[in-house]
Length: 224
Length: 320
Image (cartoon, rainbow over all chains, first blue to last red; front, side, top):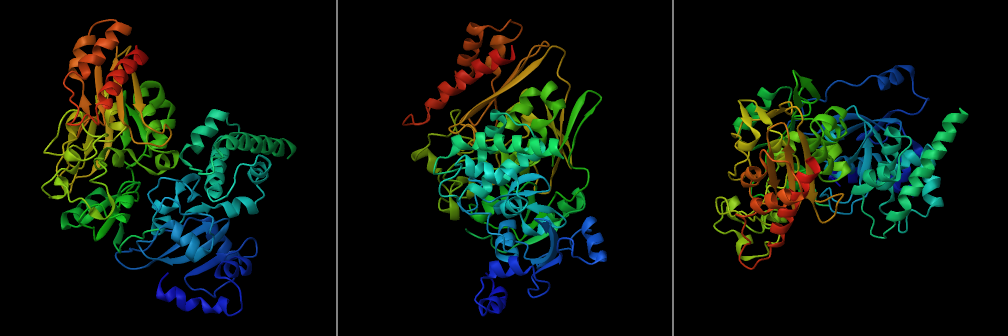
């Protein structure tokens, strides 16, 4: 973490709250200049809500220095100052405060535990540059849980994890699959989750969990 | 997690502008980023770019379309989009399957076909973090694989004293389908596209950029297939892979991960040309394909010869 960020830390720490809970729970407006949620849920002023619906123009020319990116994470808009060599994972964890994108393989793109959904695609946040995420819509496991997606209950019912470290990556990948294919076969699930590693060896439980979530989603759709 | 060293980042608005940055030197092109960003994070090469030029912001570089029977795939098209395209799957099956078998689902969602064909060769000495083996490809004097562990290395000899293999999955499919690569300067047959220079893997000039892949309509009655052998089916680079196109009066067979560039198995093609493919003929073709293959001293990579032979046989039977 840079000197600048450290300098901002004591604000929350002094009150005995972690930076993470501070950012998430307070949903604060302007306390942290590097990450400013600009429209929160439905409570945003009209002008900003409108802005949230239109894709912003291209990011400023970043050559060398920090740049401003605007992105939507789990339904909330953020405006962040990022360095060109920051990863999306770094932005989500250290700036926005969502810690579900994990680091396991060290940033080789080999384990998929850092998976998040960017504009509908399950991608590796460790190999995505933060400055290229201007105008994107990002979903993390926190957002999937907050939306009460049936995947969460299905994963619990099917014991689809042990230590849980790889789980956010699996859940994001599975959510992206269900968004694209609401009625996947077991082979489809195995194929989609093929890049996610789990060292506890829970692989067998994932296809039934995802298929159960798909059925639950189908029931939800037929009810509504 | 290792962080990247500082670099500047440019969103290119045209291929010409991106080429300008390349001409100024010390710049790297970024498409999907799955090869480049990993390489930079682990500092496998002795030099580090000052500028990373993002091609994803250049309009018109992605997309799959048919033009007068020909398939045109923009260089920035994601591998997953190619794998899912009904058009590619029905008429250019070997390419759809190759794209589908590349890397992992996440990398296919990020990685582009242009990046896939331009990726650097694979060798664990060359790719080791922090440039710990300054090998011949990095301007050094030694190929560490020659005396070291070369179980995954070339079975068709060294090229410019380097035993690394081209690990592309789409590359052999493009060669088998008779594709051409369109760059910012020229149109070149896929078969002639790969050639090792240091540190690249292709014939591209330092400021030359791949813009599209063009694949002719397969001859009437032709069928294509792609098979891959890897340690882990859903993730890995190939140990050996093979693409074939048969029928319609022609046959093309291409292996990869067996040499520094995709290896067209012309001897195997001669065996099957003009004949109905059955098990015995496919087997003979497999034998012909590896007739010139040699294990490296110590026989560590001898297993790859048998795999190459079997893949040629099975791919021919799959496309017959």
